Image (cartoon, rainbow, N blue to C red):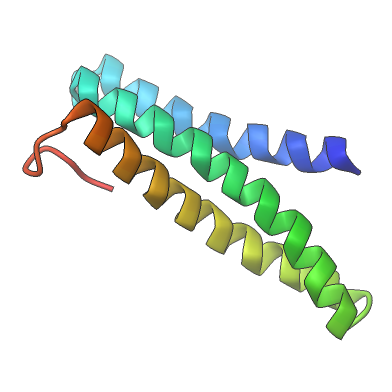
Length: 104
């Protein structure tokens, strides 16, 4: 089961990274912004995996069967967004990206 969660996280983070890489190669994004986005994608993927795991675990205690599916989807999305925002904040503060060029 751990492999499925890990592969889901890699797929989610990889798709986000591919989109940012495309923007970087088309010169729509600066190098610092790209590096901050890479940090955000990494932590977003970790948050997604943790959301899937703990969402399924917590919601299966409340409603067995369907609850694990619903809980893993909901907490996976919340975990991705939370991890992505934290990762982007860390990346922009470490790389000193200007507030005017930072986006999330």
